[in-house]
Amino acid sequence: MALIPYRGRTLPGATLASLRDEMNDLLNRFWASTAEPFGLAEWSPPLDVAETDDAVLVHVEVPGIEAKDLDISVTGNVLTIRGDKHDAKEEAGRNYLRVERRYGAFTRTLTLPAPVDAAHVEAKAHAGVLEIRLPKKVEAKPKKVEIKGG
Image 1 (cartoon, rainbow, N blue to C red):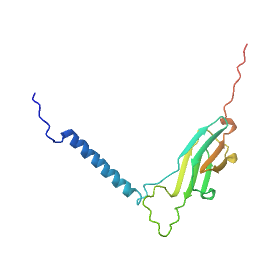
Image 2 (cartoon, helix red, strand yellow; image 1 turned 45 degrees about the horizontal axis):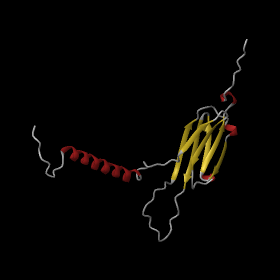
Image 3 (spheres, helix red, strand yellow; image 1 turned 90 degrees about the horizontal axis):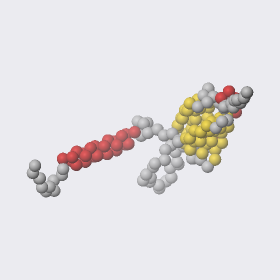
Image 4 (cartoon, one colour; image 1 turned 120 degrees about the vertical axis):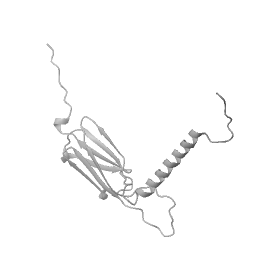
């Protein structure tokens, strides 16, 4: 087997990897630029769901959204959160160089892990976080069973 000297030529594998990377970059830029006009770049606020013995707790990040622009409903074991984050007001003489914050309407629908008492759901917002407390129905709460000894 003879060794072939490398004289500044690009290795065949490196060429294919470079072409693949360039194609991936091109496609990513294309889809990122076309997503907005076609409504594909929808946004939804991130949320956390936790469960205790007595309730299901949902925390939703909603900075910049006022309570009047939020709607929370519970139907059966499904929680629906709707909201609308209004676009910032345009100011004369200001040219935006980058806009990363999302605006517009959103809907989040969650199937809850346990039946809840919809009549006693509580919601409050503080520091841009919406906290929803959904108390469990009595039959959904864990029951401790005492073992009788003989």
